[in-house]
Amino acid sequence: MKIIAVLLCLFLFCCVCFAEETDYFDWKGLKSYAAKNYTESIIYFDMAIKQDPAYMDAWIHKGDAQKALKDYNASIQTYQDALKIKGDQATLWIKMMESYIAINNYQKASEIAAKVTDIEPGKKDNWLKAGNLLQMLGRYEEAIGRYDAALRLDARYKEACYQKAISEVALGKDSEALELLDRAIYIDPKYKQAYNVRGLILEKQGKNEDAMASYEKASEIDPKWAPPLINKEHSLLAQGRISEAMKIFVTF
Image 1 (spheres, rainbow, N blue to C red):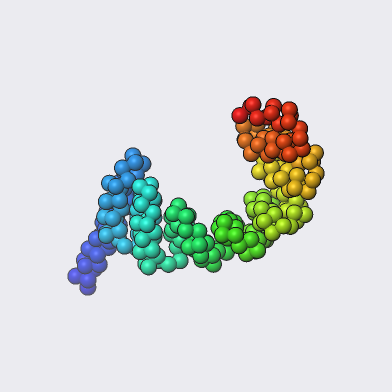
Image 2: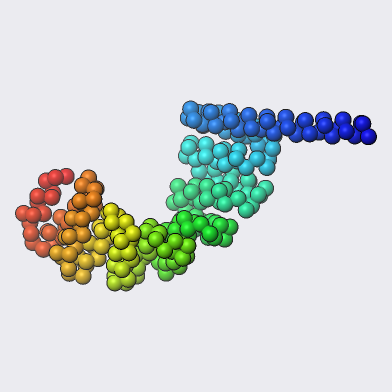
């Protein structure tokens, strides 16, 4: 019995030592990462992974370092290797999605975003990201479904209101879009993006004065933000109000 007890103690001691050593390698890697020595940091993260392949933080940190080096394909491989060990890690899927976005592979990123909503359906941001990627692919109806899922989780989620409005505009549903933009503005009266898009829709409908008011409100919120000023200038030119348009033009 004494021998068994001694062996058990030695086993536990070794496990603790290995765990501390793994933490140390990961910590060293993070120190190098913070100093922007990304290649060196990857060496330490690899040492941590070799010590304990189930140490997910090291995999994540290694992928981050590869992304910092703009080696996105290598980061994707790192996340894939980690997911073979623990496939339900939403963070790994999200990190891989970001790498696919960086190389403009929105189709693959969208597929991963859908996977993330399956793993963590209770997080509104996951549904927003999934909707945004579908929107980028021109799949507006599907995107609206994702935004609706986000809004079911949080009816005051202004970003989901705004992005859903963009998809509605793309589908030619201007009235629905305006309602969503007004809702976003009600939630956040300083939501400059919503005022700007609202102006574009109103201008499209021939409601030029109302459109001007929306552009002006967006500029009032952020005087240095160019889009509403540019939109107002173009609208004035289209209306033949050249001198007013030129006053905006000379400010750029």
